[in-house]
Length: 503
Ligand code: C2O
Ligand code: CU
Ligand code: CU
Image (cartoon, rainbow, N blue to C red; front, side, top):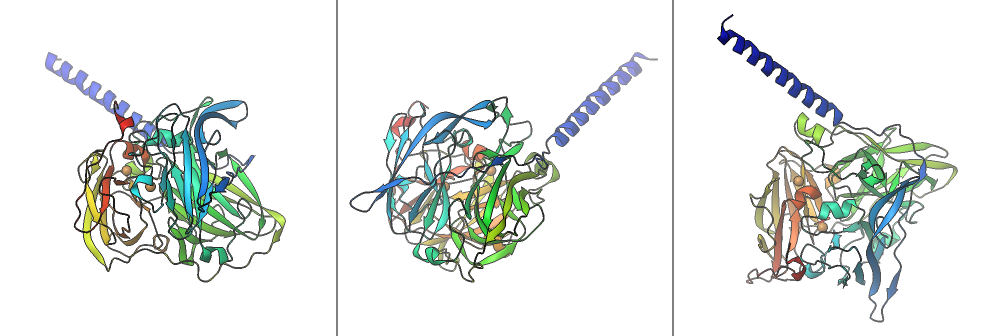
């Protein structure tokens, strides 16, 4: 054999071996990436976050107190997990207020590191928004206040420190903020908190011994994905219910995972509300997809003595099969088992008319803007704290077109407003996207058109955020800033918070 031939054979063998190893490696990676928690069982009673106590000041302001603190929680017997929470070890109490009420939240930061608290879905002045410009230094109390001026809805709160939101939320800093109004109070919907009206805060989690494992696995472009789920901080949860109709206020508080909720027996449920409040009419569905940050109010009918499981099903709309697998689309989770008592309290039917979403229909939009989503930034630019990207005029409506330019799934959240989804890829949105929304899933190559109105108040120097709510993406710069100004006014200059100096 010539020397040349021998070299050729060795090289070919090497290439084949490396090729096989790579192929085998990716095959292993690919099949290892799919997870399912079906059949794990339901052994713990669902925890219900307590309703936050409040006091009412002489001027009528309802005042809440939240303390951000470190703690430990035994998610599993004998294993103490280091956590963060509001007024407790993990998650936070449910705040509740009425439309028209003045509210104030006094937040004390006892974390030993700076953070913020943002009111997701709330219409309020930019200074009170709790975005990355309203940092709370360790030991300091921040006391934002505003008047609730929007329809009844299931909102939530969580930290928003630029570059560290994923970590702060994942350690346990999140809670619900429920709003009521005069109309919603009169509706015959299940409304006994923790009884037939249940907060369902869904998060995915992975453990490394006693500790949370928050590492990003190989190929996971979306950020952290857990291998099991918990509801309200309870693993393998069940809830006994004693009413024919049960309202589930679903909140996807996961950092990157998108769920497609349905029931294990494929029963239909009624969707009664979206992010920003009640729909006009209930919609019968068997699945509801929620990306991080989104909420859905659903009502499910139970029969005496039966059990059913709220499950998250595999999804087919994330993009190509590779992205789908590594973004969690192929995963299945048993989320929560509902166990009906042998005799159930009769519930009235769901009212024919529910709410009136207060979102514009696009016909009076004075301006169109477009947003291209890439992991490297929105419209080609990563977030900069001192750059105002968009200036909108108080009182006007606009149409925003948001396009996913990536293969990676994203979503889009706008602070301060609720929007109407006008179109998804040029077509009428599906029924579950026809209510008031503040966050919308935008998977690979999809385009959504949104209409929203900015009612102010104007503040040219303090921006609100818009961003991808996959928190790893938000942290690495998929975020932009807008200010609301009076007509004829220009955007001001953003003062970066003092507590940011040195970061
Ligand atoms: Cu729920 Cu800007 O966040
Ligand atoms: Cu928000
Ligand atoms: Cu994203």
